[in-house]
Image (cartoon, one colour):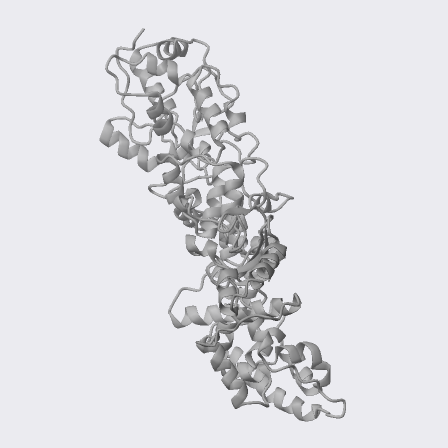
Length: 614
């Protein structure tokens, strides 16, 4: 039987509240009569967060009603919030349970029960919203956004929420209570933030303000559901970008934990029910292979910490440094040339640039190449930096073409390799009869320039030539490292009779290092840690310091005094931040100082800061 009326939901009103207002206006004495009117089911269990029986309710709506199942589920329940991070099948099952009359499995399927974040025991309200609605609508109501676990303040007024006397879970299974002054009482006992200190409340509300855009967007938008490992991959991409994970995908868990703690104070995490103490390892698990779903609030904490928007998290655009499998064979003489047949890739990190290097091998011809990444556009997938192995198919084709009497230039063109590389392979294959087309030089202008430099400075080593011509050297290295190796001065073996004056070298190195350290310790510059590697790089003697420091006693003694431990560097960074804040006239607040310095907001570092500023 169709209803004669149904209250229009107010903005952000939760469906339970709409049903409670219906019960109030219906004149029904008992809630079971209201259950029969709304759901045609007197024994249906009422639920605040994820209710069931929605299909029956829509079927009973007044004639010409504009309300649909979809509208009520997405606009008046917490379904869009809890389902966003579930796989498609799991989210669909939750929705089907909400549409049906048996909602016993909803909280298990949605992952709420196993999430580690408890549901609110009481329905909550905001006093400011309550007063505003009484004036505007003539009656208050309960909001969806006030019922989010771990969110203890209003997302509009950023003032504490209060617990009503209505149990949200664990109470009567067949009751509807509308918001009123009788059940919405403001007192110290009902304040959701309790008797916390003003400082902790301010910090908590500051963080809720950061999370609010995520919370509102989840409640009011729809995102395409992804498989669980989708989020792991996205988070790892963001961690890599921040230097908190290797390009191989391995997370630097200690650094990640330390970074996360600089973004959220422990007291705030406790209020979000996401503490990192007491053996709770959710932070490391959420960036590893997902074996279960995680509570939306924890996803939001991660996104905010890594500066990822919801749009970016669900967007297909973000990818691994070289995209996803498969990759292309780049052997021009392979029958699978430029076809996506490579399913596996080895990922490593360049020691100098820290950029990713991918190694790809065609399973059909064994042609193996590397590419420096990350890829920035689709065309990069057809780019190679260096060939590690040409493979048997390539070599066989080279022998076949060489027997035809083709010129070196033509062989080079067909084989997709530098003429000198082709020549080297022919020699190794005992095929020395190759025509060389002398009508034009087979050398590039840059190769010719390098050879001219060798003639101009015959006594210089490869390293000495490189120092004065870094750009030229790097272009040649990237274009054809094999040619460069074959056409560079041979390493000069030092005679045993040629002795190095280590005392003289010690004095020279010490002078250079003193200047470098003085530069690093300049109080006007952003702090950089004084390390052996950093100092060595600055004076271009890193290898010498790492391997022969024991032969430089004065330099070693000086470095032993100047090199910074992690602790010492953190203290210097702290002093720099405080000086900067003083110079800019900023108020010296302990937790703000620690956050700007990238340090954990804990009792140890708080005492250090207070010892400096007081």
